[in-house]
Structure formats: C-alpha cells, structure tokens
Image (cartoon, rainbow, N blue to C red; front, side):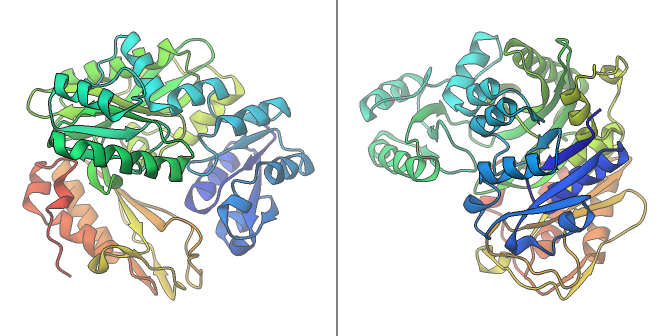
Length: 449
C-alpha cells in the first residue's frame, strides 16, 4: 500500500480523498492556492504545500508546482480528484515519468477517451451501441449537412475535446446548421483550444444513464450499477440517483454488460464511468462518453452498494485485484444526491461567492453531507460554485425523496445564495416524484421562490 498520497485538488473532493486515505493508514499531502489557505483539506491533511496564487491555471493546474510539492514531501502517488488535471493525459504521463503513481488510468487511455469522436469509434468497434452520427471529426459544414440528411434532424454538434455543455449545439433543421457549426467550433476552440466537432443524432426527451465500472490490472472488469443523471441545467448535473426509476434488472444487466465490454476492449485499468443516452420510448441505449476519473456523484453508488469507491480506486492503483464477491453484490435501497451550489436560482443561477456566516449540516439515519464549508469560510469566486453534496439513502425512492426534503429543510447555509430552494421545489414536483423526466426537463421547469 502507498505510504503517502498527494491530492492534486481542492474543496470537498480533496477532503473526501483525505478521509479515505487516513482510513487506509496512508499519509496525505494537500496542495493549495493562496485563496485556500484556510480550507479544510489543508487543515486535515498531514502536510500542506502552497502551489500558487488563486487562479486555477496558476495553482491547481500548474503541473511543475504540483510535481515539486510531490518531490518535496516524498509522496508515492498523486490523486487528481475530478476537474482540473484529472483527465489530462500530459499530467498522467508526467507523473509516471517522474516515478509517481497516477491514481487513474494510463495517459494513453485518458487521451483515447478524452477525444469524444475517437472514444465513440472505439466503442463502436467493441460492439457497444453508439448514437448514429459521424464516424469521427467532421471537417466542414458540407460534410455535416451530408451526414445530417442521412440520419435525419434533429442532430447535435459536439466538441470532440470538450464537455460540460461547451461547444454543443442542437440543430433542428437545415437552415440552422451552418451558423450552429461555426458557433460551436468557435466556442470549442476558445474553451479547449480545439475546435473539432462531431455530429450525432439528437434523441429528444432522452435520459442520461451512467454505469460505474471497476477494472484491475488482471483483466477483471465489473460494474456497480447505474446512476440516473438526467436532471441537468445547461448540461450540468444537479440531482443524481441510483437506481434509475426507469431501469429494471434485465436492462441493468444489459447496459452494465455493454459498459464492461467497452472498458475491457481498451484495456482499461482503474475506476471509471461509462455514460449512455437512453431513449425512453424505444428502450435503446447509446454510448456517449467515458469519464476516466472519480465522479462528483459517486456517493449515490456508495450508498446503494455499501462500498467506498475512493478506497477501491486507491487499491486498484496499487495493484490489488477486485474482490471476487464484488460482482455479485446487489443494489440496496435507493440513494439520491443534490448538488448545493453557491448560486442564486431566482437570478438565472448567477454565482454567489460570499462569506458563510452560519453552517449546519443535517443529520439522522441515511443522511450524508460531503462539504468543505464551515461557518466563517469564504467562498472564492475563483473556482466552481459547488459547496456541498447532500446525499440520502432509504429503502425505496418515495421514502428517499421524503428524506431529502427533510434534510434540505434542516440544512442551514447563511451568507451566499444557494440552490437549496430550487432543490426543494424539484422534490415537490409531481413529475419528478413519478420519475417522469428527461435531460430537457429543467428547461421547462418553472421555479418560483
């Protein structure tokens, strides 16, 4: 087992990794920007090293500074968390080249799955269902027009190197295609320094289903069920749950087997997530992308499976084999996660960085809150707005929704505006309660404070 791990991240995920490491008897090193000097991940790590000023590009994405901190502290491995450098193949390779274990898949794997068009081609060759569309990057509006006419509108243009909704455009008819192509490519170039696009058939009122997979160095690959991630705003997830209210055991095994098959075909090693678009009408599912890291929403899988995914991730990185009984585990009950952001839902979700004047985390049976926030903490404008993840677990979905409503009512975060009232409104929505929603659900959801 590793003796010391450096966590190349901040906020709740850095604290989450520190907790897992300490339970495994592993010492931890926190890196931090000058804006995060008083953050809890700095306080609870065994050692801490300042790696730069507040902007992420000068601190948490500063590869030389992170490697210097790892060398200074004699760390064995580096855990990237999510975001920042977690899916950066250059960082993974540099870690390996400098004799640090990168807790994640190889640089080659990250690169192949990071290029969305390449990933889609790889999965198609492995026999995993993919959304009809271009075989790879499209080079012109004319080529896009030809493919769109073959598969039919509506279609979606997507940034090949991107994510998070940037460089994406839905095109419903021919006249919109040229403008959408230019705009999406420009946006992708600005966001990812890569303007390449690919094209897919747009499935209306689809569901976003993702499968958690584990793969060890001995060619064992398993899945731990699905997560329902359809409640999104501008392609950013807000609420996740497991299991999905529309996936039965037969379909779970079918989509889970496809995820395992895809991961095995590329020699994947580590923890990862295979994401699918699910057509509720036809019951068909299509590969979208693979995330080669721990997901923000991993706690809902932990709650229904009873396993610590971060510990598993570390064990896989050190070379341990997946326990033989893990593949036989069944989902237990229902879990749900609300991402609580420092945003004003009554004002187009504008970020609300501010000092936290009062903070109280809810408790009781089946309630968990992952957060790096405390009373007196200053929420920085330099980073994303996530301040807490509220996770609840119960025997069934209806009880879980009731428990989440109770937990949201108990949560106190004074100072910044938060999305708590918005989550409460969703919990009370009859369509949500019935499981009748899709990826476009929040576009028509009317929120009144």
